[in-house]
Length: 112
Image (cartoon, rainbow, N blue to C red; front, side, top):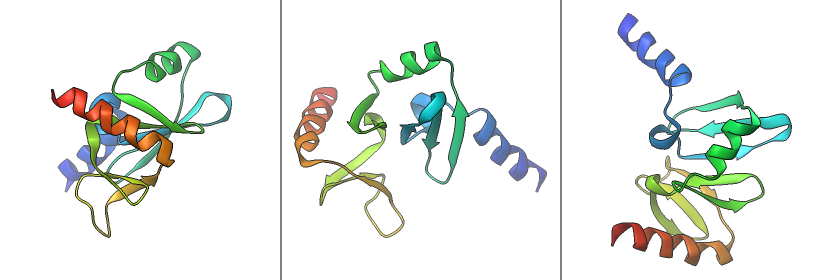
């Protein structure tokens, strides 16, 4: 039981932005909300940290302050990005149609 609690605590304190986060939202006052498979974490970031994150090639701006992790996209269907398997419990976010083709192209380029 303690190992489960430690494991859960580590996800919240020691998550890796590049590998653990599905998408994030930038809010007011440098507050960033990271969305993982089964968690949401709010964290304040310095301007330098935020700039580094926004310039990362792993993330793509889809709308407003929302950035998706290109490495975690499972599919793009019905104006939504699905992370992992598409289904009732899948994490997903809606994206504008004009961004869908650009994301598909980026994903194809990563595979090539």
